[in-house]
Length: 407
View (tube, rainbow, N blue to C red):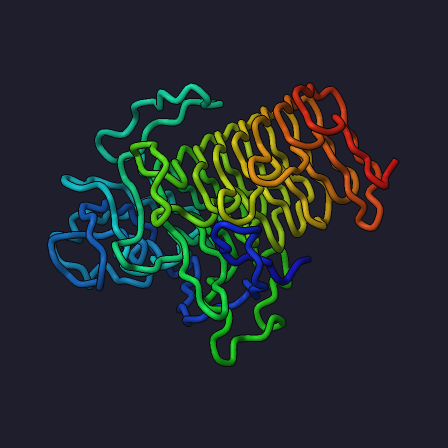
């Protein structure tokens, strides 16, 4: 199991590079057990953000706090309470009358209530299909967007620490960090982990890794679903200016059976999807992943840690600055099949799919227009039992299958 990640943004140069112990928590967050939480359905009617206070506007920050059980319903105003109703399972819905862009002034609380649905599709006006002609599966255009407020450093859009959370139908972009002497923990549109990391890994007297090590599989959120979102761009679908680009898309630092499906994941400085300590059973399917890795980790999907049972299938991975899929010393084996992987390696001459480890299956992919091999297998210390079968290769600057020292 990996306990550290090498992740800092290095704009205009190579991959993110600082070692960060992403198993730390800077601010104590009171944990409320599932038995103590009453599930509520909450309707967000304000795109504002800031301090929690009783007024006529129910913000996303307040909604998450209510669902988590950290903000009592009786602390809300009468107008706010009218938008909170008991439910069979917690949900956050939207009814934003004016500006549907939520500009965050500071990080939101993590989502800690199991089974929470954050449903951007509930916003009136949601639903027109994107007209982009390279979509694997058309993704409805979102209305509600999350982005940092002007001048605010907000590293992450949503942080998920609970089981069976679903995030649907949102646009998230602009989540990044400023350079400092000690680099930050990973910025991302969405982070899935068992504990909330501090912003700065170099805080005085940070907790030791043994204190915050995910000792048991039960520590990891299970069954998180990220679907039908636009990550890395506003609802306009345009490439954002440099100052509004997100560093990373979805970071699965510690999660089991995570599902990432039918999203547009585009225009990130680093990888669109990145794993770390464990991402066993992860299912990545029907996503359109374009133009990622433009200034940091250059690979569309970067797999590290324990990825046993992970599947990557039915995705379009295009225009990435490095590999479409890149593995770095993973544990376990993964299946990569039925993907369209093309026009990658724009900044680094890498294989379209770069494997390390044993027992991986790469089958029935279309791999073309790569300034390097189609599939490369690196020794770790010697990779064995990998299956490369029934793939279609075209317009490569290297071998279709490069076994390196494994032949």
